[in-house]
View 1 (cartoon, rainbow, N blue to C red):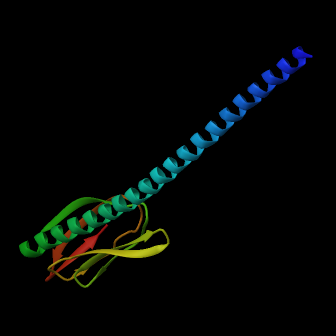
View 2 (cartoon, one colour):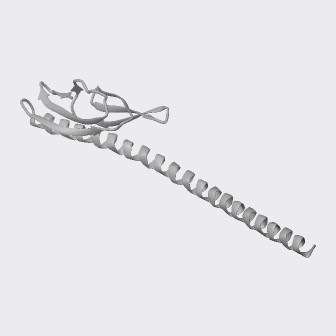
View 3 (cartoon, rainbow, N blue to C red):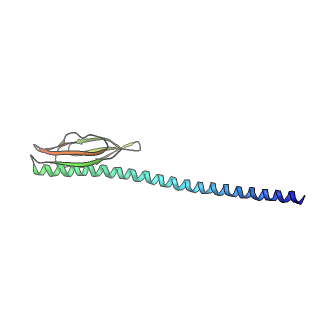
Length: 145
């Protein structure tokens, strides 16, 4: 009979060791999941900030170029390249404002810049690099691209 008890003790020890490995694996998986969620949240927030910065840079460059050609007057013109972010919903001119509307996780946010001159023209609302033609015309500025 001593042989049988020794065999049972060995099985108990192996079962305990196996259970300890499973618990350690589960605990490690829980910690890694928490870290992954934190990194994913931070990456999402950084992406939103980056897209907003692209939009603000685009409208600022267009307003600055509009001011430049307005001060010079007709026939001044300039062509600039700006980047519209991936979440742009619309791009339009209103009075002397240049406005990009972004979709930020389901809510629409306007990013704008104000120029000195009255503005008119058309802006396409697609993501990527835009070539914008800005030219002075009779006391106002035509912004097209």
